[in-house]
Length: 350
Image (tube, rainbow, N blue to C red):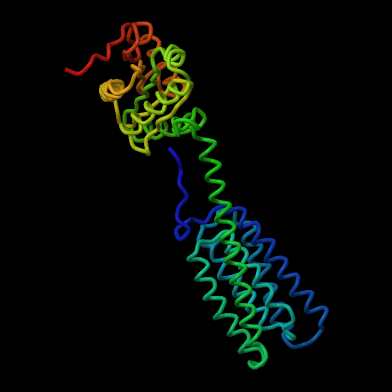
C-alpha cells in the first residue's frame, strides 16, 4: 500500500500556510523597496504611483497575515497573478526603471516551488502581457526591447529550473516515505504504516456504519522450515505468501507484514463470515503453492470484527491475536475468531 505522487500537471498546491507566510514577507519587502526608491531618487516622476503600489502591497501583506484560513484560490491568486501584476506596476512607475524588472524573479521562484505546470504557463503568459504593457506605456519603446526579451527569458528559466528541482525533491520525499512504510523483503506495508492505516479504516467504518474485520495470519512452523531448508527458502516462503495476499486483495486494501512471519489484513465492509471465506481462499492458494514446492506451507489465522468490546484498533488487534493463539493451540492450519474456544481446521477443498 503506497501513496503515489500525482502527475505534475495536476499536482495540488501544498504547504498553503508556508506559502502564505512567504508571500507576506515578499510583499512587505517589495513595498519597502518601492518606498526607499522614492526617498533615494527624489524625483516627482512616478513617486505617487510607486507609493500607491507600496500601499497596495502592504495591504495585501496585512490581508495575508491575518487570513490564516484563506481559500486556496486566494493564495494562488496572491502568489502568482497579483505578484506579477504588482511587479509590472512597479516597472511602469519606476523612472528611471533601474533594476525593477529583477523583481519578477520573486513570483517566478514562488510559482516554480509551489505551483503546477498549468500555474507556470498561465503566470508566464500574464507576465509577458503585463511586462510588455508596463514597458510600452511608461518607457521609450525602443529602449526596453532587450530588457523585455532578457527578463522574459531569465524569469522563464528560473521558473523551469525551480519547478524541476522541486519536483525531484518531491519525488525523492515520496520514495523515502514509501521506503519507511514498506517491508523491504515482501514490499507490503510494515507495522508502523499498518498502525496508521488501520486506525483510518476503523474511523471510516465507524463513520459510515459499515462492518470491518481484521485477520492476523501466522505461518505455521516457520522456524522449522528455516532450519530445514535455509533462510533463503524461508524468505521465498514469506514472499510467496505476500504474493498470495496481494492476489487476493487490491492495492487499496490494508495488507501488511507486522512481524517476522506474521501478517495482517484489514477488510472494509466485511463481517466475520466474509473474513472466514477470505481465510479459506488464502489457505487454498497456499496448498496449490505447496504442491509445486518442496516446502509445505500452512497458516493459522485469527479474526476480529468491529463491534462491542472491539471498537478500537488496539482492541481489535488484541482480540485477533488471542483468536490466533486459539488456532495455533488447536493444532495450527486453523482459523478462530473472537470468542472461539476451539478453532476450525482449514480443511482441503473437496
